[in-house]
Image 1 (cartoon, rainbow, N blue to C red):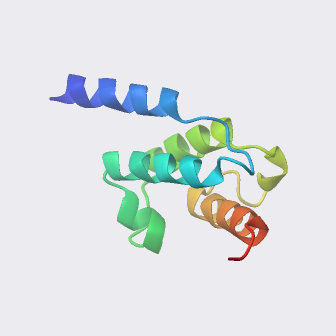
Image 2: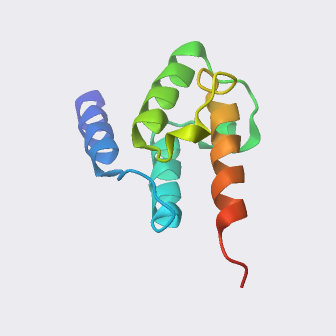
Length: 99
């Protein structure tokens, strides 16, 4: 089962496009699915309980590799995936047009 999970995880990560203003909703859905696949969705959405260092590092690496514009990533959030996720949500949610 671990081999299957590793293959699915690899495929999932490859399928996540770089984020843009135009594809943010789809990008967010795919990243959230990645959190769920890793069993980390609740921790990411609620910030509790804290992520362990390995999960934090892995998620930071994946998100930073898949995020554009890169000015969202700062010295204050590049090593904390919860802070990074909040910055991304703030940046993109605030730029979405109101209905």
